[in-house]
Image (tube, rainbow, N blue to C red; front, side, top):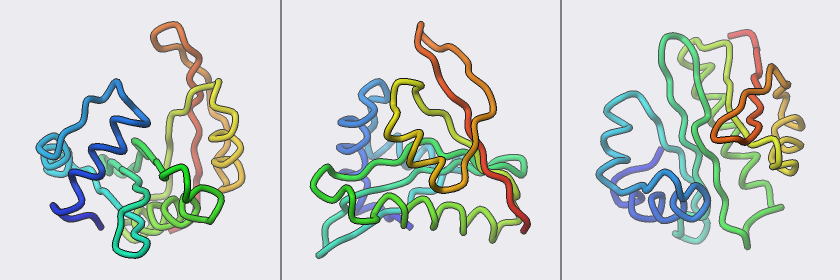
Length: 138
């Protein structure tokens, strides 16, 4: 799990990969107070990736997952997503879901590889968004 010393790097990565979020360390703390968990991947003392999961009403939603470019393809994203699913299962949750841009083919393939399936397509700001989910036994 992330702690306060990681918040600056998480905010930096969030703003790089999800610029519409305008993330700050104080917003991260606020999100944590509302049920979000941040899990970080650390290599050689450096945060190189994170996953943000919101747990609410018996469901878990992957809010964001990002890995520094130079660490992609090394299993970092897979480890983060697996840990997020593990934490959800430990809390008795049986469904994890997420939203991903229809145009983000690489992310869709990544999530499918990890057992997520397409549920439906919605539109946001004129762009297609896929809702994907993964169900499992507790």
